[in-house]
Image: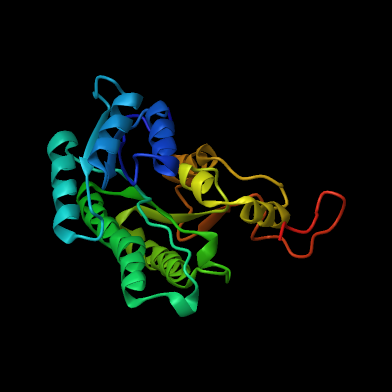
Length: 261
């Protein structure tokens, strides 16, 4: 019960990494608020995890809209009275070649993945300051650390989020708020199952020393550590949960065949 009686807000919590983290946090004793732009999905997730909704709550939020974010926080406080933990997970994917990225594409991805994360973290941190501390975990990405095809907007947003994590960590440390980030690698989410074709999967397997996709629960376990007391002196770091992707250089051998073309 590492998170016993903690109040946790999870954005983008209706599915994937957010849903897995809500499940792990509930089992660790937290009360969870599942916030998502898809209210029906958030409600379904909350009821699946906690049928009588004594320890789970569903809220709708558009993270890129200040009013929506503030309403989410106000509603959460009206129910639980405080906020201890934030998993800043809501985001939108993007795989558009640089020369084909429109300003509309750029603004949408930046607004949700970077500005939205900023708005939620700021609103949450203001409440944590009042209550004497808390934990914030931002979901960054390998795409914000390395160049890759089609990641001009998405990678820029995630790189910005990683730097924002460091700034938040420095400024919020005096308020007893720990701020860290997780950079997932290839994770077997619903979106990956839909979007990753055979060639994409082969390329990832070639680049990952552990030779497999991760699971949402492996990200959730890292989030549990960062939101527990065991991480109390960890500040401003990005933990890569990627099967060794970032660490790898040249790899060869019988299990490393060229990706499918």
